[in-house]
Length: 412
Image: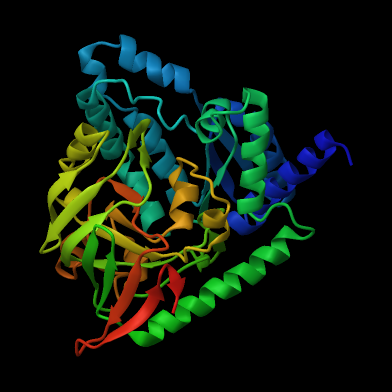
C-alpha cells in the first residue's frame, strides 16, 4: 500500500472513531463541529461518517490561528473584553435541542507567547464568560461530545523542530493515529477492549472509597481530599441523553472530583502547559485549604497568575486523574505540547470547574448546593501534568490508613 493510501485509510479510521466511538451515536442528531483551517481533510471524513450514521445536519465552525494573532497585534484596546456571545448562545441552544459536540484540536501551542499577557487574559476571560452556558451542558454530560486531533504545520514543527515541515506533519499524524488507536485492523474493537480496562480500574478505585490521595515525588508532597460520594470514571460514559460516548480520543486516564477545600501541600508540574497559545513551563504551587496560595513558573508566569485571578474557583481543583507512567503516549517519548495528549501520558490535576457527574447525588443540585458539597465552580477547566516515573501515590482511607495506589508511576 502506498504511503498516500495508507494515510487516507488511517484518516478514515480516525474519522469513524470520532463518530462511532467518540460521539457514540449521532442518529437523529445535529452535530456542531469546530476545527482549525488545516484540519479540512479530517473534517470532511468526519462529516461523511456522521451523515452515514444518521446525523441530520453537520455544522462546522473553523478557527484560524493567523486571524487570532492579528487581533492581538492590531485590534483596538476594547477588543480584548469582547467575545461572540451570540455564537456561544447559539451553541448552547443547539446543545439544549440535542445536538452533539465535536472539537478538533491542532492549534499552535506558542501562538500568543509573545503577546501582552494582560490582553491574553482579558480575551480568555471574556470568552470563558460567553461560553459558560454551553460549557455547563458539556460539563454535566447533558449531551454526547468528543475531542480529537489533527496534525497542523505549526503544531507539528513544535513537536518535531528538527524535521522539515512536511516531514514533521507526517510524523505528527503517525503519532496521532497510534495514540488514538486508529492504526489497527479494527479500531472500534480495540477501543471496546481499552474501555473495558479503564472500567475495571474505575471499579477497583470505587470499591476502595478513599477519602484522599497523597502524591509524593520531586517537588511534590500533595494531599488531595476527594469529594464525599465521589465516583471514578474513565473511558466511555453515558450522557444524560442516554448515549454512551468517549469524551477524549485518545484517553488513558481515570478521574474523579476533589473536594474544593480539602487540598493541601506542594506540587510541581512534570510537563509544560500549553494554554490558549502560551507555553507555561516549570509550574510549582502550594495549596492551603484547597486554594493555591503560592504559584511560580519559569516562563508564562504572568499568564499563570492571571489564570488564577479568573475567579475564586480558578485557584481550586476540579479534577484529579490517574494515568500510569507507562501509558502508550508516555512511552512514545514525545512531548505533544497539547493537553489532549500530554494529560494521557501523566497523572494530572485540573484547576477550575469540576465535573459534577463524578459525584453521586448531584443530579438535582443547584450551584450553591454543589459548592456546599465541595464541588468546585469556575469559568475555567485547565488540566496540567504532575505525574512521572518518580511519583508515588497512596490512597488514604477514612480512618487515615494509607494503601499504595501507584509506585514510580505504575499501578501498585
